[in-house]
Image (tube, rainbow, N blue to C red; front, top):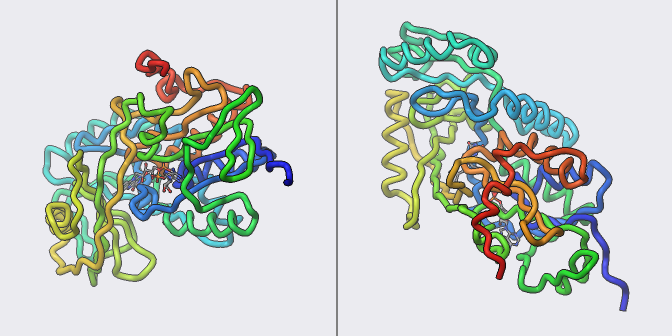
Length: 362
Ligand SMILES: Cc1cc2nc3c(=O)[nH]c(=O)nc-3n(C[C@H](O)[C@H](O)[C@H](O)COP(=O)(O)OP(=O)(O)OC[C@H]3O[C@@H](n4cnc5c(N)ncnc54)[C@H](O)[C@@H]3O)c2cc1C
């Protein structure tokens, strides 16, 4: 019998979180193996990939936008160059105003100065003329974000992982993992590892070591639509977002938010809601060409969950990305890699140590 293969890091999950962290660790010279069962309902495979500096009706700047968005933009642009394909589009996002009141709110926000000003390219308070667009109250042009073709990027990275041997497309069985003094052994994979990082998204709840965390699955749906005549020069955002696809006149419209019980069939409330929001943005007729549904890893305080397990020093988590995994993963993967290498601290608001009081040893 040959000796088991030895890795520095064993990662479970190759959604956007696991993919970015694996690349970060491999880039630092670590021996990394990733297990991923590519579930079609994994959040990363349905995400529209929007990186939006502004959230919600009150036009609040998204959490730590000025620290995470520039890092994400640079990261995905560089990754596209390395892989020889562009996955990221740095389009402006047009936040369409629904009323004069929204207009006034946005003007007040923008007057707050930095870091706001860096993200607002222009505010228009008169009707915006663009092919197919309904924007009688104007809107705000936001820069510094864009959108990523997440599913295509993950497929490209998975091809690389298969070719280079660092990805196994199998379900990982936590029950078969055995810890000892110097790390862990995983007999089904004939391997040993010094450290394990759970990057399972909402499925982290099924990891027996992290079920105590306040992680709640939240279902979302997106529609793929054909809208002949609608301008594709920007991302549109009002209630829903409308992201241009690779194929002309095709767009992805998202997203809904649903707590359990989850919808199982397409064509129901989610589709009606998103079609209604699209109709607020364009008077043009459209055809729904597809509906996708995924489950977000949402956290009670709406902040990611990173860091070490309270009792198992070999085990860490990289997750809880809610609706923002695409823009947060690059900056936080580098932070977690520094932390695991004893080279830096985690931001307290992402460190899962904030929930250690909930942990009860078995
Ligand atoms: C409808 C919708 C739209 C969204 N739109 C956006 C958006 O525009 N912008 C944005 O930033 N975010 C968006 N999000 C959120 C974003 O998708 C998530 O924040 C992000 O994808 C989470 O990534 P993750 O890698 O943590 O989890 P996941 O994408 O869920 O990946 C986890 C991976 O682990 C695998 N896995 C799980 N258990 C096991 C196991 N036992 N063994 C092996 N593999 C396992 C899964 O199969 C999966 O491949 C959206 C989400 C939804 C649902």
